[in-house]
Image 1 (cartoon, helix red, strand yellow):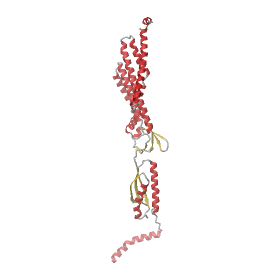
Image 2 (image 1 turned 180 degrees about the vertical axis):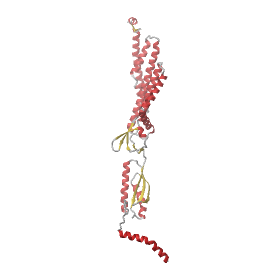
Image 3 (image 1 turned 180 degrees about the horizontal axis):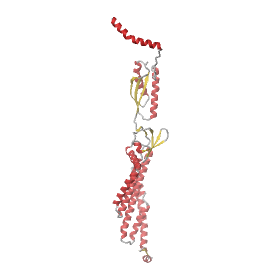
Image 4 (image 1 turned 90 degrees about the vertical axis):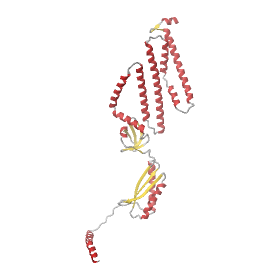
Length: 375
């Protein structure tokens, strides 16, 4: 049998060498599979003893080892049993570099994927995390990874990559000019992710739009308005506006005015600030600041009140303001203080009364002069 294998030749190589190469490939592949499983088992046991997630991620990355790379590596080991021409040595070296680089890229790509999924899971649990940075970093790392691998493979094969990189740079400038608006929104989303002017779930107001942030994308941000419809806004246009983020408000400053009628006595007016303070403090979750008799209005004596609600919730503020208003109405009613409303007094006279009044006003200086001369 051995003599027959030595005599028969396939592609210029004896059949016996092909058999030895096949056996070496199979044994090498099985050995690599066993070593991989052994390493995963040992790392899994070690990761269970620690509380960090880095070693767990390392185990998951190694579990993602592609079987085709192991088979290709085993086949290259089998080629050592073949009598190949000298020119194949450099080619096999290139293949070893390609296989190892490809597997390293797969490991790094799987690590990026696991990190992205973990960050997105955290965003789903907290409902406040901004996913823009996670998505952009994931895309950037993957693009950088595969670009470096491709350039390294080309350089290893003897290709001059300097001119290739320069041509890619020129092409990149042309593409950037063609998609300038898209890139503008893309960098605006990056600015949102880094600066964090708002996050998912925040209630914002800009221009005539008010609503809660539902989604922050790479090009647009989606807002659920108070009336129920979804508003899709370009990231670039959104950042051009002054944004009011009400969710980050620690407390709400409230200023309101009211007026009482002019028939109120000074004693009643002096009692009003104390009544207002009592009403504000009894409402709960408030901090009283001031209450003053501000001025004389056209039909009212005007008061100005400032207080703070220590919880930024809008519904709570409205409940508190309603309670204060009702308490003021109750206390003012007990003391006979009336709230003012816009009024205007008209004095109606007939024509004869108007003429008599004019005559009296014209004779008054002469009468006063005669009185002084008599004195």
